Length: 494
Image (cartoon, rainbow, N blue to C red; front, side, top):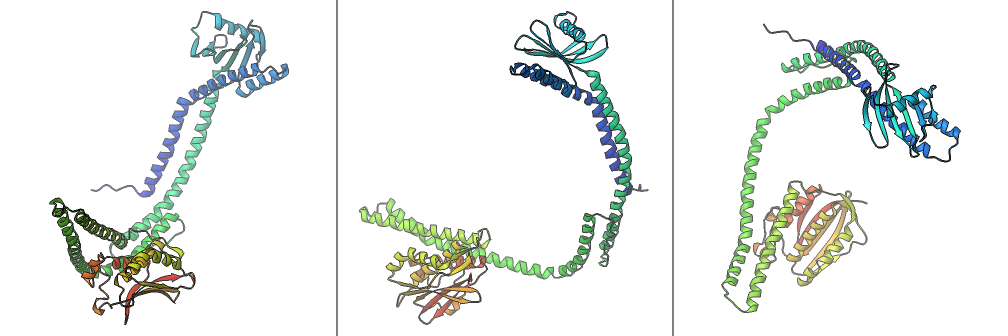
């Protein structure tokens, strides 16, 4: 037969009462064991402090006799001690004792006497000695400090150990009395508190059983006696009951989603294979060129300086193309996987485009291209300034590389629905209509020979699309009768 477990209410009561009682008993044990030692230790420190204060007071030459008396009396009163001070000739200077002669004799007997059986030396140094001494006449123990002064005088400071014991005893009795009352009061509070917790928990337990039987009508009703956490838990279970019903119905459609995910995975695998094939193809040509020209250099096919310089230039050029493609791939990877942080700022798009045009001036001159840009004032937009600059640079570089006929490149703005559309148009050949959607795909090239001629890798427009997706804005391309227009949109500040 299975043993019946204790209810949560009684377990809470017994546990919490045990913790309170155990804590109180432990405190009583520590008090009885260490409180007296603790008091004595602090009294020893008080005697040392008094000696140092007396030493400092005696060094003051500007004190009057009354000031000395007041200072010494305050020390004795504040620290509950007795003190006797003599000069170098053992003549009494000041004392707090009513029978100073007797205590001076005790002091002399301790200094010069031979019977040390009643004395326990606690510390012995150059300036003072601290002992625990028994007064045989009174059968009492004292803490005694005997110190030296600079003028050869002596300081005798004494504190009764019995008063320390009495203080510790009174403290312990008071603690026991208070603790007994607090234990009884705690038991009452614990019983009330445990019931206020266990009852709502029992209700939650019943609710969970009904939910396990898929009874979605089960609800937790707040009674007003539970804690905030229990009420929140009950509310969460109510929400769980509502969500569970929806989840079960959603699970029925999970197989469809799973099938779609499998198909998507197969597509991703195909894209990965295609990506590896494209990368291999893009790297094959420059690597072959580098290998061929490097072998030519090593075999000294042409020994003249012009040929060697030409070979080295080809190797460096192909290496730079591969390096540029790898950097673009890394940038694209950061963007597609969301690892590149977007920093949205308000900036002047006109100023940014002027900077890109200036940096592309030499390339445009080599192509004999004319760049037209007249914004008629600043245009402020919201976006990641560095990434927008990448987009404009990519558009303008493509335009310069593909400009033809009139060799004219026009950059312009158009406004609509709180957006600014920035267009980069170049005269030249149109992009075939069936390939307009494909130019954003990695490594896709409309004219492979021409792209190879200027060192393109087919990654630039993929980076543009990834950047605009990270900014949650649009980009695109439009064919015109005399050329091609690439555009992007940003939120306007107008």
